[in-house]
Each structure stands twice: as structure tokens, then as C-alpha cells.
Length: 105
Image (cartoon, rainbow, N blue to C red; front, side, top):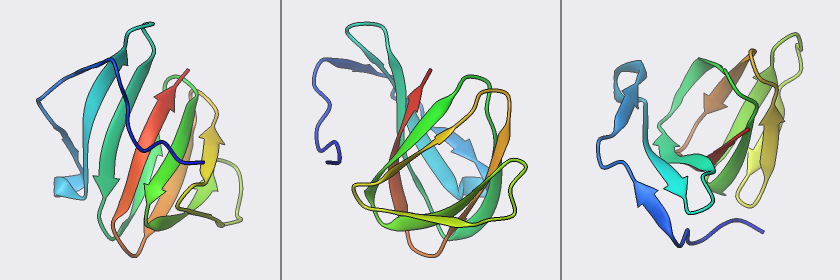
């Protein structure tokens, strides 16, 4: 099930804007110290690099993604999620606004 509300979070009100505005997110810190970002990716094909492992949770919309070292595009839609190893890259292809929560670590 997809996350619909995040309680007890501290929000950084300054947006992170990437790829000329094709991706906009806000950082959150939960009461237990876990970090998340909440954002939207507009129609585009983008490549992201990771430091820590990430889990991308689809809140609305859909995307196709391809993990580093793979030639296979996989689909993720509302309620789904996919994991990306730390210190790697992934491509994401979006044809409609893709609303997500990124869980770090």
C-alpha cells in the first residue's frame, strides 16, 4: 500500500530542483532520524546517481526505470516501489507526472 500521509516529520521548505525543473522534491526528516524526500518528476527521461541505497515509492502516476548495469526497463505505478543500490545510477522514464517518496538507506 502506498503512503498517503507522513506524520511527525520535519520538512525542509526549500525545494531541490533538478534537470531544469523536471524533478522537484522536498527533504523530510522523521522523528526517528530517517530521511525521505517527497517530490514529482515531470515527463522526461532522466539519469539519477545514488549515494545511499534508495527505495522509490510511487504515490501517483507511473514510470519506467532501468537499474545500472541492466538493459531492461521495468514499470512502476501507483502503490508500487523499486529499490536502487547505493553508489549506483538508474534511468527513469516518465510520460505523466510521477509523484514519489524516496526512502534513503
